[in-house]
Image (tube, rainbow, N blue to C red; front, side):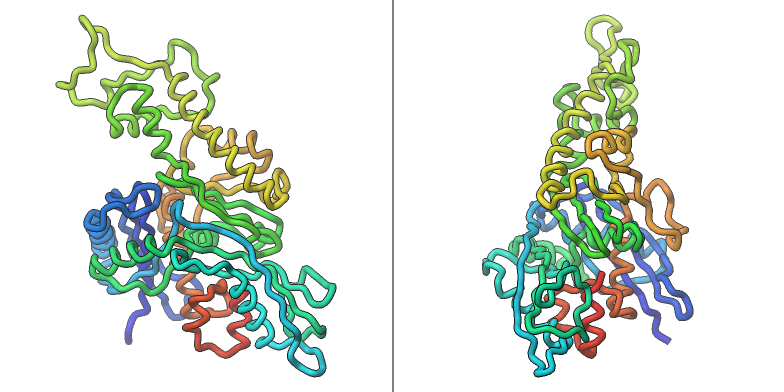
Length: 421
């Protein structure tokens, strides 16, 4: 009997993560078989800058997952992120087609298509997802499933997620050049939300914030659907670069210093708290000035560098929350994921700056075999596994995207259910 294998790939600025999972009969959730995490090369702020290096990074990551799982794969589900992703809104309006005024699944399909038709056509943009946020029947709003209701006029408010077409072509070329086919692709924060957020959190109102190496991406949920999303061109590598400049050292050393001594609160440290660069350099490296004077830097200075860069990030986030009227108004708060989320003190400073409850997110309990230390950075790949499982075996649980609609051969009722995240 053929095994049902899912392979998910997340190509980040710092690392490339691959997760191989199996759908086992009688088990509700996928079984994780193997994980591959390797350094990412050829990517800057989520954008491909060297095709050959990215192909090699993909091969290394998939091979590592293959070794740990004992399973070879030929196709992958791909996460799409990076500063080239843009988010907007669109509205569609249609007249109900049936004479008795009952809204049918076909009416919902037509109104979604109407919303898509109002998007400004740009040959350099590729539509990733069009997600219904709210339906309106005549004068009644706040409707999540209008099928079966009666009315004359049906409207939809939809979230539009697009990416730069050249980027998408480049990333697909990298995957195919590495020897793999692409099953489908998903906006990374939507995938991460499948692994980290609960249904209750999505209903109450929550922001998922993925702090990666090159970018910070987010998605805001309310009443169970994505209300807003976006990508901010700031990440852990920006902090590392600032540390390298401030400490006048190599970027690789700055990264080690940040991981070992990074903090978000300068006032925690006194003049006696110092960092010795000799801890991070080979013995024969010149780290002394004069006779026996070792190069040291105050820990307070490192914390000031980290805090200053994070302030830029929080200003962006507050601006985005104000755009949708949710600044300080998300009862379930903020869930932090991504490698940069592990910075000491980040939870506390995020609470202070965004005025919201904050906690570090982790993949839900059924990913019990995943190491706690790497779980935040694996959230996107693990979420992709769940997304793929939903599309393949639970079509009613998957989120609508226009490109998937065109290929979807399920009956209309199942298609309608797939509109709901």
